Length: 305
Image 1 (cartoon, rainbow, N blue to C red):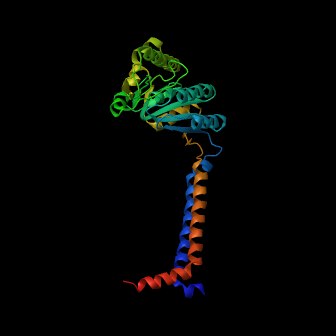
Image 2: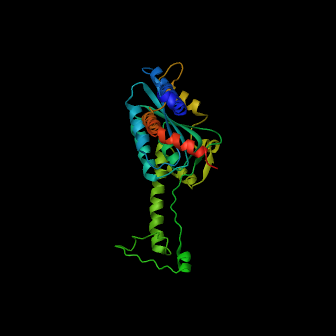
Image 3: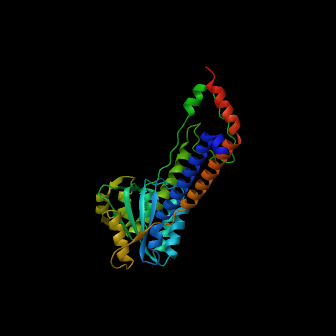
């Protein structure tokens, strides 16, 4: 029998099988445990929480979560938990627009974490209400465009860039030459126009006088406490305060329950689990197939010095 002929390899096979079974069971418990709240809250009125974390580079996932919560009748209101220093103008404006469309049907409250500035504040301005911590970093209502010029370095190493373009502004902002005054004006006009879009949306979303917004939209950051004094936020508080507020606005009586969007990571966990199982089984079969050679090698190596 294999177990008698190769006791060591038999032990490895049994041990690997036990590890695989344990890993499988733990993964199943983890999967159902992570999603248990979803089953427990099914059919109950609740507040949906969507997290916006890090640099805002793509709006696709956030828009999808907003739409799914908007269509769910048990989601009575939405809380956007923002922890972001900002990001791209386009994605921020897309989320801002979607919030404006959804809040006609459902109330949306923003909870600011450590930072909700620039594009993070742009998104927040569209909500029905904003809650921030006293020390939250927010504001930074402005637009920036920058680049690094390597012309002097290129001159020192003797490189001569060659550019062929279809228009005089096509290589505007090139890092291999100085920017002309005409080019600076074009870029400055662009930044000013986008900045004014930011100012108008903040004034509209927060129902503030546009001239008042202009005075504080100079790129400065504000604490949550100062932001409240300027009218940029409504209340000082934490995430739980925002959930409570959103729940009451949504008509929820008694305890306010909350739920996050269904995680797509469950599919990834299943995939990783299957791949791990397949890889482990392949290694076990290789050990069995090469058991004779391995045994001979082990015996030979023990006799060498």
